[in-house]
Image (tube, rainbow, N blue to C red; front, side, top):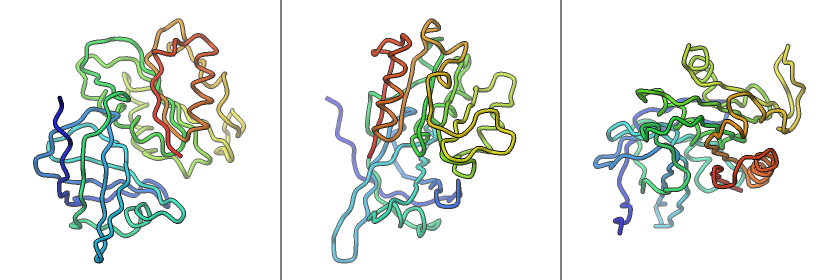
Length: 243
């Protein structure tokens, strides 16, 4: 049996702003055992009176020694996310437990050349970004497409990095669906993700991609249903949902 994950003290090494209200925390945790792209961690806050609150967050970058990264967006009336997204500073300490999860993972070094289709809704792009980044270090990167559904251009997480990677000759294909407000000159009008958005040569059912879908429950169920509808086998679709 696998040993249970232990709580560790992690120091906030860096804070990066992703959007107006979301940011990435880079943590340093001594003894961190490493992780796979797609896994998550628990973060625990303890108040002065001893009250504790625990929340789960996806890791958004591949393993890098003792360093791990999570991206956080505040949730209305949340106990943990407003503090992490607005008050935590470099040098602060947090408690972290992990890595957790073994189903929604992708190891680009597994030697399987099948194309990979990643579909994320809003903050559900976080574990998918770990997969995009992990692919960059693979000796023979599999064809990878990231399809991200967001409300508006200013709500794209990791926008500059994704645009840079997509511009590289062997980089991933990055497509964005805007549901409420599209940027000037956009060919696709704002609206929810639909079947034509999923159907791109190289990642169709006949191409046998491995599919990873992450986001709010309704989004994940809708996207998974569309993928099955056009012929993707259910056992090739892995999902992670929240809310």
